Length: 84
Image 1: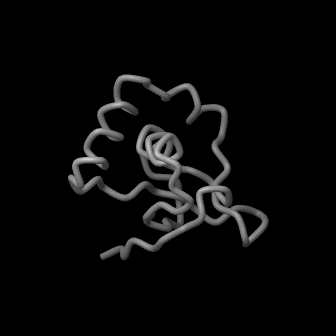
Image 2 (image 1 turned 135 degrees about the vertical axis):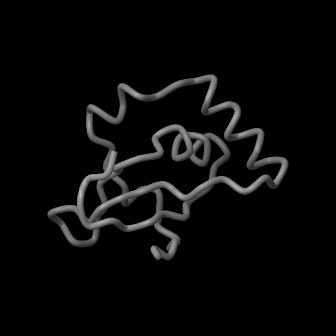
């Protein structure tokens, strides 16, 4: 089973195909859940070519919600291969 780890948000690269999945209504909903301290599933990332960076695999709206709230870190599962 994967273990979620805290990752700095500014170390996550968002590919163009993930940016297309951005949904303002879902971002707002996730942000409200976070404010209400409702648990949100960790995002999924993979190691980038630069081993100190990550590439977003899943969770653009959860990531954007954290950004909007001013968070500097987010919990993520580091996966080996692209999962959809």
